[in-house]
Image (cartoon, rainbow, N blue to C red; front, side):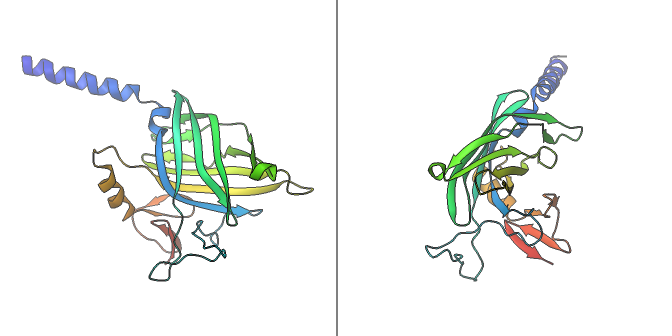
Length: 221
């Protein structure tokens, strides 16, 4: 009888913990990954992840002659059960490190498949390089989501003082966060060895025909 009661209590406790998981809880964490930036035109198959550059703005290569892609961090912080603050750190393009993009008050919700979807959010104003670049930024709620430990986020940036017309800057972050296993470093390494996405941010089980993103590198099969 005692064993039955203990089992029942444990089951109820587990169900209670599951019920308390909110969209903000599921989204919260620090994600590491690659960043795509396209100035003026949308991101497509020809867009490369941002890579390391030397002082002459030439790509830094590894020992095999491949470009070294820059690792970016996104931090998502819970505000309440249905709102988060989104932070993209060290954002930049064309060899410039502009700074951080912090977007508070972003709505989130869980869909029927358990994915975190972003809700409609207002564009926030930013000033970079002591006012030389004025911009606005918001999360594209129609294309961005978090699936488990994987994040695919499009940030719509608009350069507002580039000239007579505003210039759109398309920003795409694809990354993941360590699973809560108690051995985060090891699980992160193991996951990175098998992380494959297509250009739409869908996680794949293996490299498929066409353009693939494998561990942050673009692979064409």
